[in-house]
Length: 419
Image 1: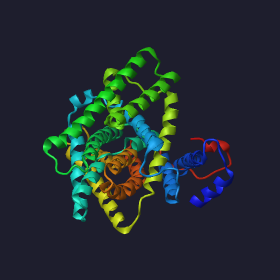
Image 2 (image 1 turned 120 degrees about the vertical axis):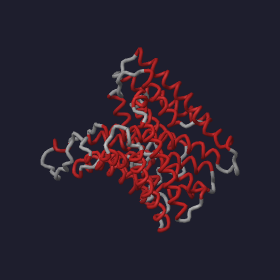
Image 3 (image 1 turned 135 degrees about the vertical axis):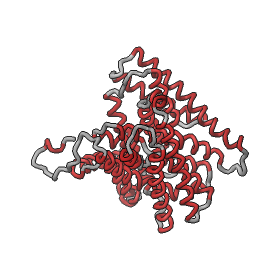
Image 4 (image 1 turned 45 degrees about the vertical axis):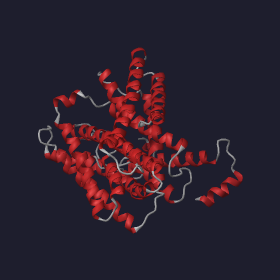
């Protein structure tokens, strides 16, 4: 691919630069592939996005440089922030007062995931200083992937709602702990106070930015219609500003957006949804995020020992998610079969994990690449396989209003190409 780009560069001189042309073509291919895999295979569009990005990364696509920095890093942070803000806005904290076992279930699955992944990696000979960050990364599910699966399958029901809530909460834990852990790298032995201080700083700054974000949007919604195009632009602009400020002051941009969405839900408890215009902009940003994640993740060094560690991490994580949800299922109002499908639906890993890996790489020049060598292949694998598992779980739970019925390829009518 580098040779092809070099040939193109001799005679193509676009005003915005050759990388703009490359990304435009790549996103167009991703959109087409996403549509085709959903229509003719019955699987979510995100699988098509990830496959196109993965092939591009393996072919040597140079439009995304690792470790992420500059505009690429900001676009990933913004995409994650938009998705987590929406996810946080769907979590009513009052629900936990009526059903506290959901919180117990969340803590159980995240804690068990950390210890099982950590034990599995150290059992196969990985150093503890590398296994610990990877175990923290494994805690995070992917609300971004799961929300796209839910949208494509038109799913609703207790399994879908609980999987989204637990995925969002696990992401909250991982963002807080991983951001704090990245700030502690290279400092040697730490006392308990030194260990807890970075966690408090990350959480405190993110809460402050998230509260400002929620208050600003609550004030805007008092005078603006939720369905207005200007409201959509305001939402996106405020989230982008909040993400930039949180990262600048030492907090976590995605965590601030997630907390901002949760706080806005409490300040504005009436049901609200994204304006239609925001949905279009969010869909474009989300597709870009999935392609960027898979392009970057595919650039990892693939080898036999790495594959063994990746499989150990993925297997331990999947088992821990299911067991953790089952352990906290008593008194949570869900059946054991529903707990199984919830655990399966929490399989995906994607943009949040990649963003956290980028933080580890930036924090330590020695440990960061070792963490990334295992995390990047695992992210690429679970972005694709996790989406398929989540789709299977939703259909097995009977919560999709759209039948899983792939259509045969037919080009006789232009109308057949509609979503």
